[in-house]
Image 1 (tube, rainbow, N blue to C red):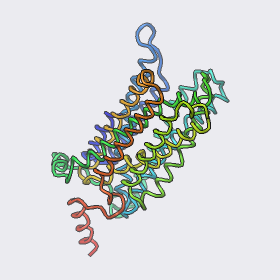
Image 2: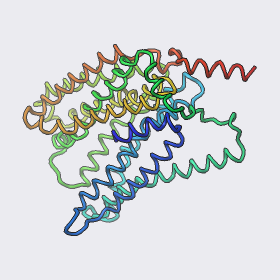
Image 3: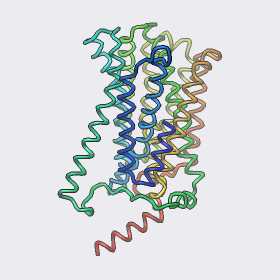
Image 4: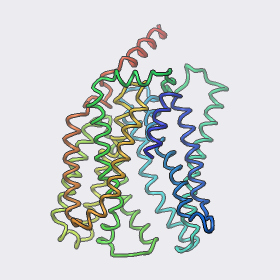
Length: 390
C-alpha cells in the first residue's frame, strides 16, 4: 500500500486524477482476482507465496485509492465549506467496507459450511466486484460526458495534469511545508500505529470478552460487533466536520482515545473480568478513532496543500500512515508478550496524547471550514473564473 500511495499519488499530479484512478482500480482488479485464484506449484512454490505476490499487487492498487479518492472528492466540490464533508463521506464507506467481510463470511459459512476452503477464495474474490462496478460507472460517465456535456459543464473540477518539473517546483514553493507534513503525515503515522496495532490486538480483547474460540464463524460474529460499535463514528464525523473543522475533530478524537486507553490499561485486571465494560471501552476507542483521526487524517491532506502538488503530498502522508500501520502490526504482539496487555494500552494512551499535541501545533484550524488561506494557484483559478463570467 505504501508503494501504491507514493506511486499513484505522484501520478495523480503528473497524468491527472482520473487517469491515475483508472490505473489504480485496474491494479485492484488484477490483484483481487489473482488472490482468489491462487494455487500451489507442486514442489516449487507454495500457495502462500503465490497469494503473497497477488496480495502485494492488490495492496499497490488499494494504496493508490487513498490520495486519489480524497483529492477527486475535494476538487469536485465547488463550495469550499462542503469539501471536508464530501471527503469525509467518501471515507465513511471504509466503515461499510470493514463491516462487509465478517457479514459475508457468516453468509458463506451458512451456505457452504464453516470448514469449506472456498470461503476464503470467495471473500478475496468479492473485492473484484466493487472495482469492476467502478470501472463500469467511469465508462458510463465518460460516454455520457462525450455525448451531452461540454467541458464547462463538467462537474468534476479536477486539476489538470502538471507539466514536466511543475510538481517538484510546487512542492518547493509550498508554504509552511514542514509544519504541514508534521500535521498530515506525522499525525497519520502515529494514529495508524494505534489503529492497526489495535486491530491486530483485537483477538486478545475478544478472547477476554467472549472466551477463547478457534471457530471462524464465532470470530466473524465478534468482529461484526466491534465494527458495528465503531461504524457510527464515521457518520458523526461527516455531520460535524463542516461545523467544527478537521483539526478540532482530530484533537478531540485523540484525547478521548487517550482517556479510554488509560482507563483500560490502568484498570485492566478488573475490567477484563467485566466483559460488557471491556467491550464498550475498547469499542469506544474505535468510535472516537472514526469520529476523529481515522477520518480527518484522510481529509486533511486533500485540503491542506496546493493543487499542483496536492496528490503527491497526499500520497506521502498516506504512506507515512501505512508505515505506522506496519510498525503497529509488527510491534504489538511481541510487546504485549513482554510487557503485558495493560502496559500496551497505557503506551497507546501516551501515543494518543502526543498525537493530540501535534494536532494542536501543526494543523491550521481554518482548513476544512471554507475560510482557509488559498494557494496562489487557487487564487489565479478564481480570478480566471471571474474573468470568464464577466
